[in-house]
Length: 381
Image: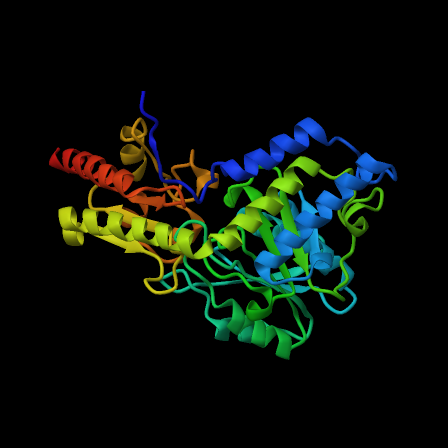
């Protein structure tokens, strides 16, 4: 039986074969605790530091600025709570946007229960934050701005470097969740101007259960977990050597193959959209910013087609998502589409198709045929 065509790379990615080889080698040959002083422990410690450099190189950071975590959600919690509690004497106001991932929104809601105040900024119809809105929201007690680098649902890229200029001018720390942008678009912490940045392994062809947090040198974070001294004591616990090595290798590959992978993803997305537009023309609505968008992400709606119905019918042949993958079982319109003021009909009909570095031209041709045939049948009745 032929495997379905995978077009949901924003939800997760398969483990790269080179990454898997590295993982198997560690699993089979290296079990030493990195905190041990004997040889097998020293090897594990060296492997972790090598991975730290690989991650740092991808985002143009220093190795000592990289902390390993279990996932992007944990990185976001450490960043936002850690900065908030470390700086609450200066102020208790945080700025974010209404289209952030729950790993940001829920942390902010928790902090509101701890007497912090949060401003949730709107976005335009393309899903983009206006830097002027950020500047207007700043108060004397603002201590942190957290805006995602690229949206997971519609692919809109935020004006991070412009916001960073504002944050720096006002002496406010700036965090960005870059889980969806790493490996797809340039993510250079120096050019972006951010103080903290989150990344996730499973969006980058590494396994689930590993992430990292960039923390610019000199920035103090209050612990939200307590234990031994691993990861500067900020993320204590015996290190997940296998997955850390995997993340490092994935970052090395992402840097090495960046141009090729980005071009492959963009070409596949454009071919898919063009093929569908030839079939349906103006009956397709494309969501998100037409210029500032990830090369792999296509959020579209078909006239008179319910997204869950379409996704369900084609699920034996193609894997796609209806809105955010984190809410795949929900029929409620996503907060992102609501924030972009999409009309109900368009929102209900929206599917997210996201390509990856493995997506082939043949797969796209097949996907266009299957989706087109299914949409045609659904609209005939």
